[in-house]
Length: 418
Image (cartoon, rainbow, N blue to C red; front, side, top):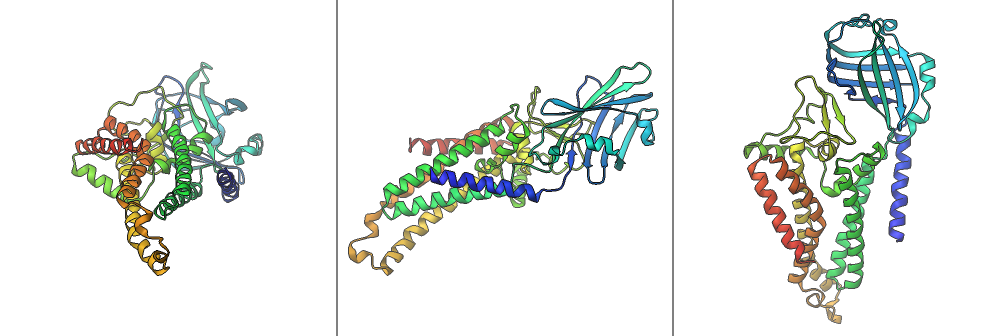
């Protein structure tokens, strides 16, 4: 219990310090999502950043407009479902070519900066820049001047620079788990089975809790941004980690076995990507391709979490497999090194003269078998999730066969510990 209390205090301390590191006040959005059934606006790329220090609104846009006529914009800003700012904008006041009147066009705005009035900036509460993982939406209704009716509706999710997701939290927890696992192995080899079992049980309990948090974040359910980012802190327990060499290996393996790697993450700077809290759509086929027809790419569940970790959707299973195998090999090598190194240490410390013989400390065949079963148990939730994911994605026949084999092998090892 004291360990969990200290760990909780450490996590809260890291999050408290991190909010001062991300002290820049800024509101951002990276995707325009239609909220009406029409095709007046088709978006390939959208970036928006509001900086209150200089009252500037920076916009980057690439898309198509199909409407012709004079328009007004009704802008509604909502935070946590409540509207706190409503205003009507006349685009003719901003000297924007092609918008007064609006004409059908393919519009590319590589970089534009608008200066907002102090009255508009003052309407945004200061807490919007500092509250972690702001849940805000800007909804824009395009109103035709001639008919005074809505032509189309678009909305953009707005985030700030403050978040509960911190990479340092993941590293801290990983160190705690690693120390717990290796500490229990050493104590077990020395014969302190009671202490070893307690540490092993508590470490596995903590790891299973974090894996449960991570799996909640992988589901396609409606969560607030704060919950999404909180569960992102635990995705490393499911081996959702990014490394350039792992991307190279997994991409090479897919191509060499007849698969087609996705390029969603590598093309993120040229397309508009929305990270959905939930979706009523059903993804059909394999990975989510990059958008090439003027529509946005909307990410759900596992694909969303993989993208946020820097992984292509087709690399998620193989990355998890390689990380699991790496951890298993490290632990196995540590056990072998312990077997041969511990006897040397005991001889030098003359423990064997007092009857403290290594042979009596551990039955090494049983000890190694038990350790491997423990590794399989710790990685079993991850393997079950991503094996089913790979069977659904079917990136390549070789990966499907690997997924089935890995699941059967770990299930057999897991059953020996039940």
